[in-house]
Length: 202
Image (cartoon, rainbow, N blue to C red; front, side):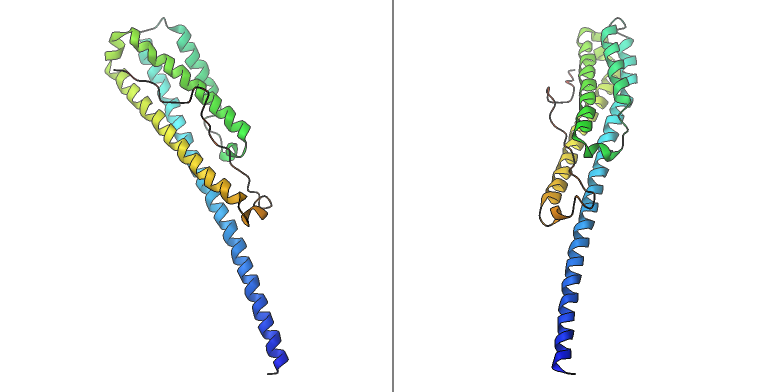
């Protein structure tokens, strides 16, 4: 084998190794983004599940309160309106996480429902029999637990979205992310009233 042939083969091997390395880096970056995107989407589903759980608790809670405080029509109307608005956007696909305005709208509707629920729960202070009702107390516990789980799942979502957003903005991934169709995820933010679990007093 001549020296020139060896040189050509060596050069070809180096080019092939470089191309394989670049291919591995690119496919690794792409697969990493796919994995992180799926994690964010999966966590979004957990957020939705908790909001749906809260949504499903409301009719039983309202029914129980109505049995003791049927004349509190304004609060019941607020709950009905807020639940109706929330019902239209509780189960929406994860594409909402790509649009900060849509996620902010979703959050605003959910925060309105949280406020209406807090007003509903505060009614119990005026009705000692309601405060002592075992069904009402159980529903309060379930609602409080759900609100806490919503806060936890939202935080987990924000943490995963932050990791994903950091990845697509970091070099070299940032050079390809947009071309591959990966865009930044929106975050949940603290509401004006700082969303918190309804205050439950026994």
